[in-house]
Image (cartoon, rainbow, N blue to C red; front, side, top):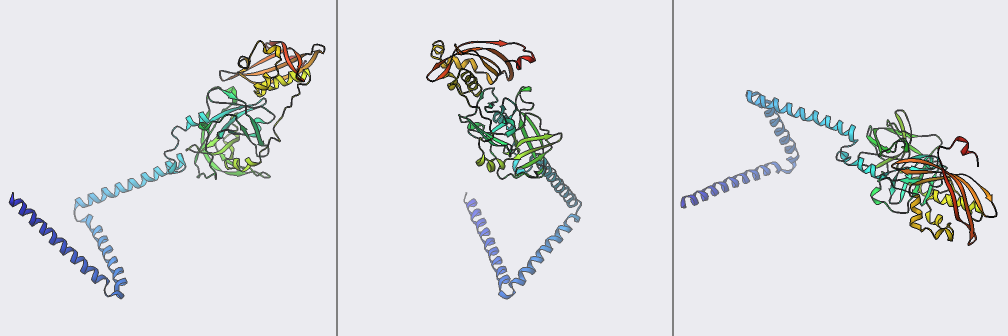
Length: 416
């Protein structure tokens, strides 16, 4: 193996000699380039132009030296041209389908997120949609809850709650419903400031046609058309070509990544307007309950006690309603059993009350209820009497004789 060792030593010596020669040549070249110093700028420009032109001439001549070189050149040029136009197509695709290349990986699972986060808003006089902007804040349009003191929030799983507090601003057409519990998994992020690219695809979500249409959230896609402003109003809007329909008001308008850019507000065929998302944070500090419908109760009279009882059921204030039951009534029930009787009641509307026996404190009452059963609203109609009893300074519910009325005629709604 000595010969192999000698061969390696010889090879190393030759490599070392070649590297040494290369180093000295580079050193000499740099010396000629730099010195004298006053000629260095001229040499730098001249040498640069020389080598660029030399390389360019070689590149131009190379394809014509042989048929093989020409074939390689044409093939390479065609491939580069194909890649260039492919990038143009991809760029246009990303622009028209995502708005921006950074949103290319967004959108996966967005439908599932919207189905989980968007809620129904049900009032006594209107229906719409809403979504969580924080763990206990649901935003919707003011016109959805206008005239309704106790709207209901219905989740995608069919359960519902009554908000603890409602505030809003009629002029901006926005309202916030505060929940008693927190729902961190349902929060949708707001884009503030709102930045949308030209023709960027946007997604509107809401419960189309309200409770008349069963099933999950309706999700519609469209393109951003521009920002719009109305005369005499400080509210800004986003215009798209999405067809918003009744029931979707108050739902979110999002980009491909699920960031909320607007609130569904109004729509005509092929045109719709959305309050920009940054308006929520702008108007929120000034929201009050000034324009929110209010109902006061006074159970210091028999009729007032009956009205208060059904008002508490309407508001889902079950503890207050339970406290209006008399001691005698409580002997045959408890809070859990009593509240289970009304688990599906969304709303109660009292048609009227009148005294029928003042000596025994008996009150006639006529009312209707909205019940949420299997994702549908069922209407029930009742009439009858409540006997009340004075306890602790207020009248409480003692004995009832309430019966359901099936298929009432029109006159039932007007006769008390």
